[in-house]
Image 1 (cartoon, one colour):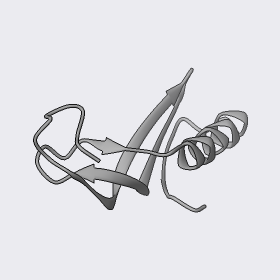
Image 2 (tube, helix red, strand yellow):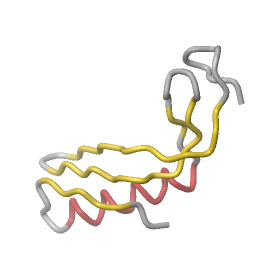
Image 3 (cartoon, one colour):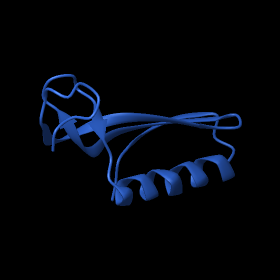
Image 4 (cartoon, rainbow, N blue to C red):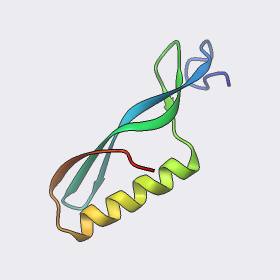
Length: 74
């Protein structure tokens, strides 16, 4: 797919790091699968990965986590 940000690069299968915040909770998730632009580095996360990230944030928020770094797990 052509990158919609830079309009020059093509996306390739890769991974990215995502930071999420909700209230007092900050969650950083590494190795999130994504399509990454080979020109500008913009990352596109699919709906399944996004849903998993939301579940991870829900768990961390409910557990009272303030700051946490996790590896992505499908």
